[in-house]
Image 1 (cartoon, protein in one colour):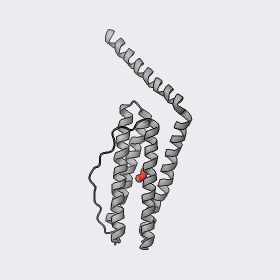
Image 2 (image 1 turned 90 degrees about the vertical axis):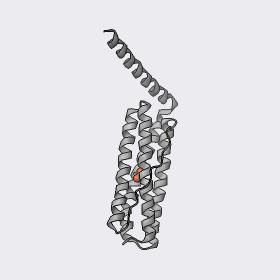
Image 3 (image 1 turned 30 degrees about the horizontal axis):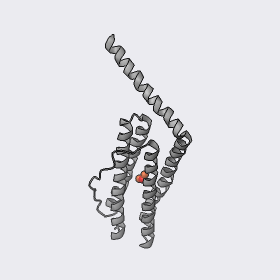
Image 4 (image 1 turned 90 degrees about the horizontal axis):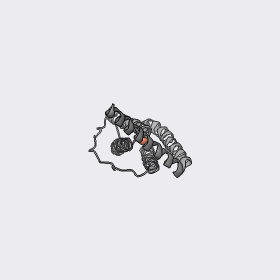
Length: 173
Ligand code: FEO
């Protein structure tokens, strides 16, 4: 049976993982409508992963005799500025989640719930990987610099121009 305090903190984590999924879904959609296909695919996949994290907490709470509560939806922002801004936001959010996971580990130690502590260890490792992935992306974006982003932007524009020319050619044929 889950300790009441542990159940409360785990239910709160369900909400945080659900929001992570919503946040990355919103970012994926933002990237998609801005023509950033690769970035949007990365974010859609990340959103799916966060849903899987949420489900892990739901399953664990219920399995241990608790009651998982499915939270209401909270709307994430619609715009994220630049690509770098967006990934800075991802890193900030992941740091927040890491802190939250660490608090669960601490709470488990306080009440000597080593079963839950063992379950949460998977998330401790997952957070190391997630933070590293996002830092790698930010390193690459920093290497690209503003000039690189300009070229990327021009590339997108020329793709648009090519598509428009193809459309015009098709209409005239
Ligand atoms: Fe489920 Fe990215 O933390």
